[in-house]
Image (tube, rainbow, N blue to C red; front, side):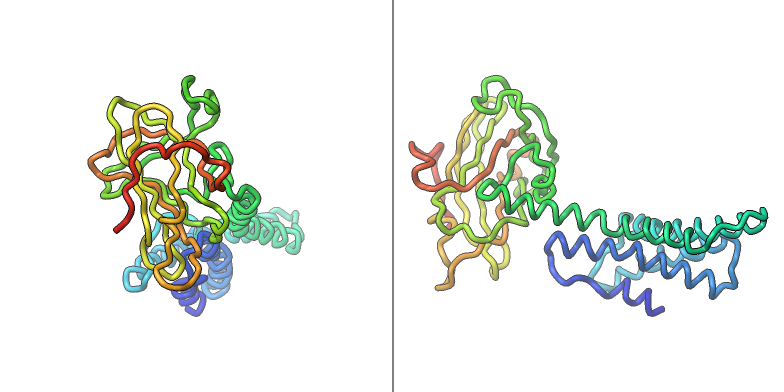
Length: 305
């Protein structure tokens, strides 16, 4: 029961991707230990009975989450199974080898089993750590389409996939670009939730886009500040069909809400529901300094009120 309580109540305490990933990954070793304990408490039952009980407990723990601050999840249930099955497999292998007169070292079996469980537990967190390292190395570029670690740090409430830039998009012809199709949401868009927080010393957010179709549409850059709920500031640009280099001045996006220096918690590039179904291609997203972005802004800027 203690292990079940730990699985239900303990989290790593923040909305950061790494903390969420560690919380999810903990399902694997917890249910491996739980399965091993059930094996002993139930008097070493047949594998199928052990599987039924362990899986039933996993389903029950997910159902109990409706009374906690967490939500039931098929992903969590799959992670529970990834802890349950290796333990049942190790128990069954040892049992069958003993019956056949060809015993196998228990140390070898359990070492291999726990090594597999450790690998499955650490795979996702390590992937996030690699993404963080790539994010820090690529900064001030926030998105480089085709860079898999960076794409892990970008989410969308529409659909997105990698595709190739059209021939008339200078600098991106036949290069990987991010294709987004706006969903039926109030503010369909992309969210960068794991950005480097210090944007001091930069003058503009630069976004290379290619809008398909014949009609223009707005694209808003909304910035969240650490310690402020939601987004603190936004700027909107009217995007013309075809290729554009959009530049959002940071002096407006980073205007403090109090006297404290602004630290960025997230960036959202979004439109509005009336543009659902529109297809937008996105190239590099980066921060630039004054000498890097000469020329007029592409479109009409509408600041936050």
